[in-house]
Length: 277
Image 1 (cartoon, rainbow, N blue to C red):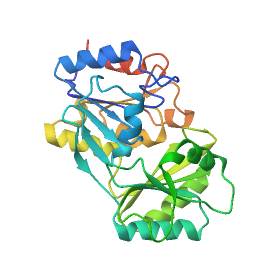
Image 2 (tube, one colour):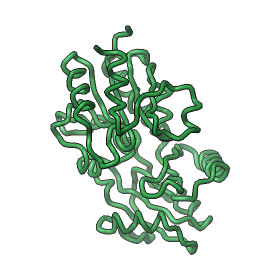
Image 3 (cartoon, rainbow, N blue to C red):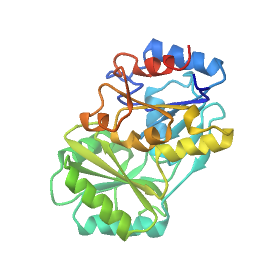
Image 4 (cartoon, one colour):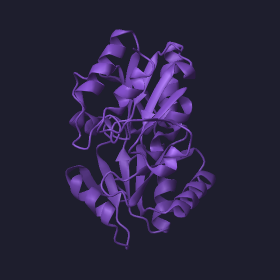
């Protein structure tokens, strides 16, 4: 079998069970891989603050690729090795673009403080936006011209699930505002909604993996990637051995990735066992 040097797994819906825990089998297999000299990493849309709420510091990880690749965090040294941010010009342009089209959205502070956010509420009620507000109200403040961040990690827009509308927004943003990257993910609060996440150019989980591969001279066919959602696509396309869990959307299963067990059935461990005895 190919010599595996790096294992990367998504968190929500992949490594985490529906109860936001990690199965003992998944933990054990990651630990065994680490003992064999394999680098282990999580790649999540969560920021580090929210990652620490569900993952113990004792988990066998070497790195955390957080905020969909905007930051690469050394798990042992407790420090960032890579950070990519939106500059003030792009922050202002993106906020104006979204306000003009009457979108509700969140603007997240720069790493490492990107659990803090500003919000803009449109005239149209959005239940998913309000649910996110309620869950994060202690870290949220209404946006004004005076308090807008000089630089930011990302913006997030919630829209009802609509493939055509997402594609149109992504195309328009990336064409009209140079140097931005638009990523889709499913809302963690209501799967009837899409989260449109806007980052600096070349931010993705795949780019985070590429950073580690260049540092350690690892080739894509030496990488296992496990995910379950649309924001995992860049990671899965990079990894030479790409797996999606059986609980992934049917549309994602048509992309030709290998299938592993669900997040409730230790799918990460099953993928590892296919390559590391």
